[in-house]
Amino acid sequence: MTIVIVVNLFGNADLENAVESIKNIKASPEPIHIVLSWSNPSPNAPHIIFSLKKTLSNKFSITYLSLPKMGLGRQRDSTLRFVLHKFADVRYIIYIEEDVIV
Image (tube, rainbow, N blue to C red; front, side, top):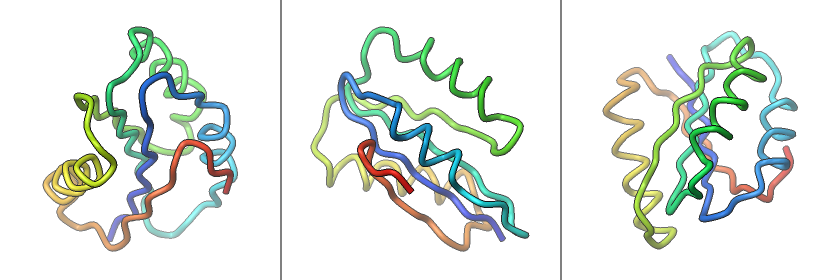
């Protein structure tokens, strides 16, 4: 079984809180995967994601999902479909927004 934590990001998101949240997630006997779902990402998003993966990849696998500009409901639906397709053995899906600190 797998745990997937989805971090919803929008436009010119500030990833400082998201990084702190991910750092605060404790180890689990089940694998934990992070999916960064970014609606209308800023032009420097690939660079930001690369840096984030470099910083946190030793703790979690991180998947970047770039989405066009859309509302929160549609973003969650698209991300949920992606997660269910990519992680067939998912047990829990946890959504957090970019401004939440775990």
